[in-house]
Image (cartoon, rainbow, N blue to C red; front, side, top):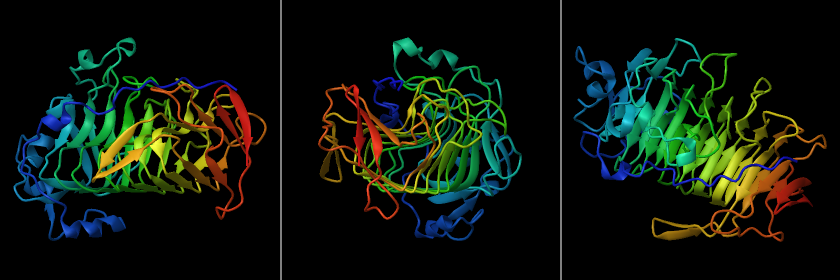
Length: 402
């Protein structure tokens, strides 16, 4: 079995994000936002403000949203909402102001399509290529199509697409950094961001949620292509970073050139019916990779995942690697030392010709591996009681577990 490259990843936050600010007052999530979780296309009523009521002739999307004076969710009609260059706060194309409690559109549309609400950047308008570090120099990629950063409480998002276009360099799709409360997201599609490696800076992300607790994703999809049947551009699809709790329900990530899902420095994340890869997703990855990559995690549970990796005789279905990293959130300290992982009723492709589910643990890992042979990841059949026999690649050996 080909070994995956150990990701010596840097801290994946933007670093200066917390110290900077997007124009707008600070506000919380309106109770009326709860109606949005049902999947309503362009909700209305108390707690919502229409984009048309903010926009004035000549406004950019960012400038129009910055006119928001009352904490609310901004709703958008169908259409294509374009920006030029990564020139708003934090080198984003579109910046959502702190006062906004989220945004909702009129449908997520399809990859490469023209229906629904699409946030995108005009092709070839970036002047920020010089900001992207070379892979050998390390660092992180600073450019992002759309960003919401530093809100003091939570936010709700739904029914739109964030679509990447050719800019001559790599960039992220949609990023939410350091929310002050729970983020909920329903029926959002992120497509065509650009990445070229399994570690920063080439490791870019379609959807990033960094920081906070108990976020909820429902029917969120990351598709690394820009048109159906086209080439794959995106590196990682969906990532939780520095989070506690949280769920991904009926989500999907595919056509990524690196790992479709990454959980990094995150605890007690649960997925339900997540779908990784597709039958038509046969791109050769920039790394051997895995379907779901866990780094510095514990307490994560995957119920009924479908993981179809891109290639045969290369890679694994999951990775799970830990050192002694700790994080304190809401007064409680979490540790990844010998962190646990549970998988229930996985559906998977036969990578290595033996019809086995594969998990790999990197050793050594960062400040020193803490995983032990006596406490491997747990994989169960449907019902969560009977174990599934699987292969665990750990410390240069392969173990039959279960």
